[in-house]
Image 1 (cartoon, rainbow, N blue to C red):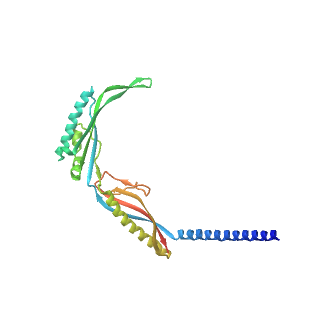
Image 2: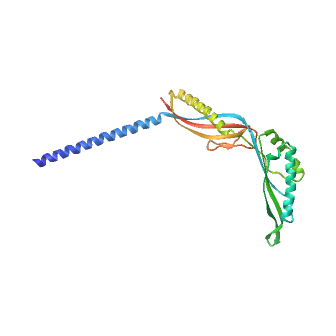
Image 3: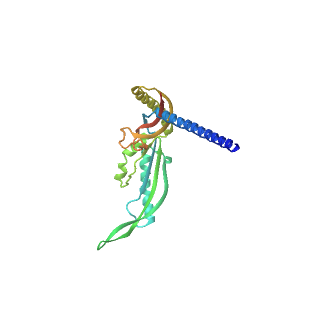
Amino acid sequence: MNNKMISNKSLWGFAFILSLGFILAAAVMGYAFKQSNNSNNSITVKGLAEKPIQADLARWEINYISAPVSDSISEAYQQLDQQVKNIQKFFLDHGFKAEEIQLNNKSSQPAYEEVDLGDGRFRQQLVGYRARQSIIINSRDIAKIAKAAKDIYVLDEQGLSINEKPQYLVSNLEEIKMSLIANATKNAYSRANEFAKVGGVKVSNMRSASQGAFYILPESGSDEDSDYGGAYDKTTIEKIARVVVTINYAID
């Protein structure tokens, strides 16, 4: 009799535990189903904002190498010093102050030419030396930099070859970016509402937001921009700043 009572209690206990397991499993599945439905009740849109901006800072870095080739290192340095003085004079004549023209350390390098030995064999032969020095001009006078860049052919006529172009930069990029993000967010909300009208739903709270690419483009635009990366044009003075955001809204 006692064994029978124990057996019945065990069965009841097992049944209770099994029932509780079914209840908990149903609750978990119901919650998961509800969350799944809620996640589908949303819309994801991109917002775009752009505005014209202008460079307010210029940086011109010239990596100058003396020419022609000198017979010795000391001659190469002497030649470099004279040619750099002529380059400095060019910028001083264009209204730049001496402190705006930064001269970095000088260095020398051997110059070689390829000699044909015949039978498809070649040898590098030392022919002399060159000296090099970088010249950096930083200025907020954009018009002055642009005029010097336009007149750089004058140095070319003197045999002083300058290949580098000035970079036109924007100093307050973060401020521009923040103002564009606000406008891009408004644009995304407007787009979401247009989609919602067609679908017969209503846009609710913002669920998530992320900033996409941030572009500084030439005023004429660029065919190389992409939502997957930004761009920073440094070759033009007049530019277009553009921001893309991606926002997910709940819909009712």
